[in-house]
Length: 450
Image (cartoon, rainbow, N blue to C red):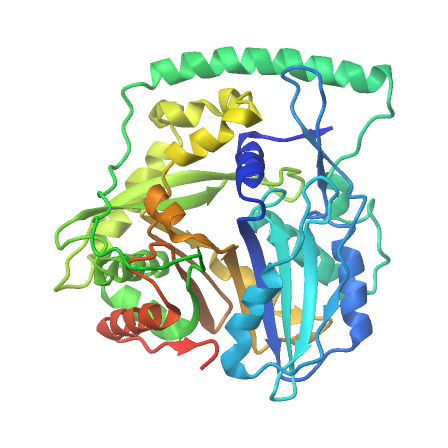
């Protein structure tokens, strides 16, 4: 049985408070349309692949929930109204609003629409409750590969074999639950011991969220998202010229955006949270397999962020992360977190804090999904999708900025989501900051929808 881990459990608990708050969305724009049957066949492969999973629970105390094959799926959406270029982002946002259900397995959906220029725009969403971005990439690469090769739809022959199944009802299933229950009790004892030993381990501090300004944003607020393409050759050249790396420049640009918004003052030491994949390889069955790697660097309002400082911080953090003695106490408490009853989850969520700056670089991931059935896409992106919520929720969480990037051989694509409603109230405000920051580095952005 493929049991949930603490990362899976965290998203499951979040889902109980705010259903489908965070999704992963892949999107493609094609210069010419692909046949309807192509999309139906792709959806069949996805529905039998790595991200097609549901969550099941047991009443056996302390035994963890587990993944099983889905019992429901959402249909492919075929829109008929052509989407103009300046409507791409709004259409993609609309397609994220789907009735996903972690407990039936209706956790993904494919949607297709014609573009006003005669091509197609495509959205694929997957619940973060069952798969992180890396898991979504596993599902997409496998499904696209099987589609291109003409392989038959199959659980056993695809990455769907990793999802897991459930023993028949009876003693075998009960024995499995009892065994896991005993193991979890041991894990809790180990977690308490490890947390005590790590009680003096510290992490980079975060900056306080300024109380002002406080904009009037009634009702549900949609975190603005911008997707921007930049020449990879230009990006690489700038990074090299400044003594850094492609990833270092990505972090520096993200810090610059946060600073330009007014969220942090000149000279502030910024905490940057970097998701780090702990997926062990192609046979790793985990839905969510990420840990955090925090670093800190200095923001200067009148100068570009020092790429050498970022490079050194990344190296030091990477070295420290490989030593269990450097794992902070809170990060050791996953087994205890899994025992928190549903009734008190809202309290824990209300006391939590979101990163002031979250940067996720997936590297050359777009190369693996840039073509569908042999047809190359003109544009590709993999990004986080966030559901509208009251602005006060983001203020309470002290959320800041979430930036992801990935590249193919020619283009680096950034997805920028402003989660501070008083610094990034609209997409127009956000895009003006992006233009100014990239211009300071001598880089030219091309926005999706422009």
